[in-house]
Image (cartoon, rainbow, N blue to C red; front, side):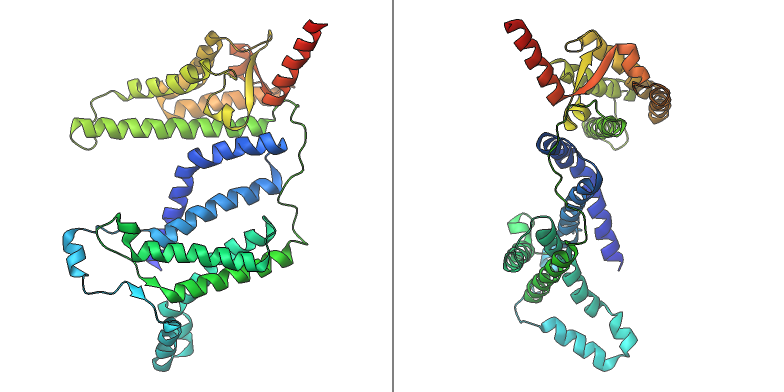
Length: 362
């Protein structure tokens, strides 16, 4: 059970790591395709990413220290179990020596059950989200399980010195059964659940508070990820853990200026990572693209408090922004007001440019 809990922690860690690399561009794609990303379809889409991370974590991690000593110690062990239904023989052998309650909670039975459960979400999503037939769901579950078992049996295709997990034909069987069970559940529940794919709508209204809030979250994750990477690099260059030589205030200042001033200044949208992820454009209240000085003002109001005071400073500033937006009918924040900027959606920006071009042509 402790191993499964560790694997679950890996799953959520992967989810956080991949959020920046996968979810942000994918959210932008959803806005481009459907003009929105909210409600039940957003929940389903987020669940897909989380399930993918969980699948990797539960089947590939934790990685052992496969040193030469480890490999030599386990050299006589076979990492390929090719006898079908051997796991059921193990369950039967355990049941013959133990009471029913002990068997139902035993590791040998839980391993079989977990292998079935692990692929139920895959079959469910294939039926519900992608509307695939049962035989395609079985084929996908079989192929994916086969890829996982081959990866395990070959030690990540030779990337580690020796295999560290058993490639079991019973896993292939139980995973495929799980995919079929999931497909049946998805096919049955599809008539009761909302449509997981939204109908496209024009994305011309001002971006909502929730949409702009999501942009702030992506900005913060980007900032913290880049800052953490620089801190680790600085420690490595210093030759000792927790002994970085560059002042924190300098590193955080450089990262924030690059992400929220330098990057937006060369983009037509004038948006940072968060704004890009939700497909919005920063414009001047006087019209046109926001000037570079406005980006500097936005950085000074929102991100300089983090540079000087850490997360506490950022939280205080974000709270002030939230209160100001709540009190105003146009929901503009203090950062928006001080920089004389306003957020609009990218399609509305394109529409405005087309209208201006048509007016000039006349």
